[in-house]
Structures are given as C-alpha cells and as structure tokens.
Image (spheres, rainbow, N blue to C red):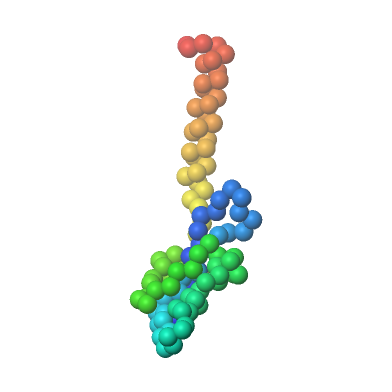
Length: 114
C-alpha cells in the first residue's frame, strides 16, 4: 500500500506558509488496457500539487525514507519527547567576558592606550 510523506522545504521571502513536497512511495502504478482509439490515460497525480498547495508531488515504487520525518520511539513504541535546556551559566560567562571586552575598548578609545 502506498505511503504519504511530507517533505518540508526552505521558506522563501514571499511564502505565506511553509512550502512542502508530497512524497508518495511504495506506489504500484495502475495498468490499463487501451483500445485502438484510446490514448494514454492522464497520470493520477496531474494537478494534485496545485490542489493541495504543494510545490511538487513525487511518486516512487520503492520505499523512500526521509530522515527529517523519523520519530524516535521508546521500547513500548511511544514517541520520545525531548526537552533541551541551554547551558546558561557558560553563556552568562561568555556574555560577561564580551561586555568587559567592549567596555575596555570604549575606555581605550576615550582615554587612549595606557
């Protein structure tokens, strides 16, 4: 059975919502029996991108794994939620060092080197 995946694309300056591509994998194309007076049928994906607001629709017979769509799960199969905290003490030290450096440069600019 075919799978649907969304691939988020980088935003452009004029984008009012995040752009994306629809990826369809494990797709089994339909076979048609055509009569002598019939032309090839249209692709089932013609016009789909415009209808759903995607930049494009890509269909593959193989399985396509998009790393950005991987969701880590725990041993029970539930999604793992991560909480990331910054190392604020080190950040505070870096900011204080930069402030001291800027103050020293201002003092040297006003009084001249000593």
